[in-house]
Length: 336
Image 1 (tube, rainbow, N blue to C red):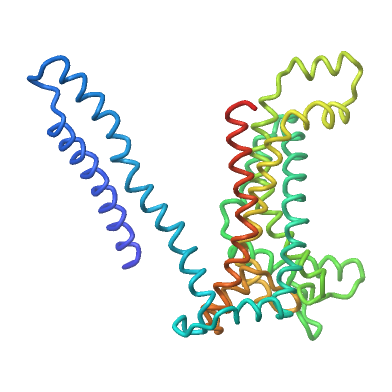
Image 2: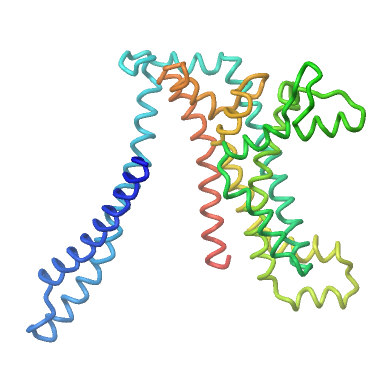
């Protein structure tokens, strides 16, 4: 109850502070550049000046805070990567030598590459198929709502749900895990799914695909609705079947949107660690870079130098994709 009260007070103070800043800055601007009891030339000049300054008064604090929160962690991570466990002893390139000689790092990197290949592709593919199919049925909006619903669940919450699906019970107990219950029903032997090498990574990926398919579906559904009906009608008149219309008419026209969705999910995959931490705690060969960074920095490792090096690796992987995504989005907005 105390935390809720603190959160509410913080929100109210934040809103009041923003309102006070808004009215206060406008009041000062009107005082510095008055428009009353002045000549026409002065009024015109003051209006032009105040209109040029006013946007920066409101954007300025946000830009400064965003710049600080973007650049300070990067600079501090670079600094810490040359220091030891406590962040005080300079060790030079020792952390980088450890990184490239660590089997755990290569396991994490390999698993991340596997996630990058499977999750964005599967989520985008299923989102596109579902978006296309649900636009053709009368209960499509209901289906979209149900498919989009996992987006409202946190990664940890989704992991708890899927733990009940993969659950395994020993000693002849009834299998309450959905997957094992189905296996037993059809005469098979229950399995500890999350301990099976390689395959356990795919079982974890299914969770993120389940969450992100709704996101891909919503974005791609909006893009499909923007396709001119004339192109579809022309293809039908030319004798194209449904598959040809989908692959040769619809997909090429929304290819830019598909690429943006794919890269957005890719960036998310590089940062994901909640699912791995909650489901397996990175055991049985399921370690990923973000979870390895977290483990070294906070979860018993306590080595800020090694954690910072792994953070820089993630940053180097994310930045090119993010830059391409932004440039592609800008090109889409400009109609190129």
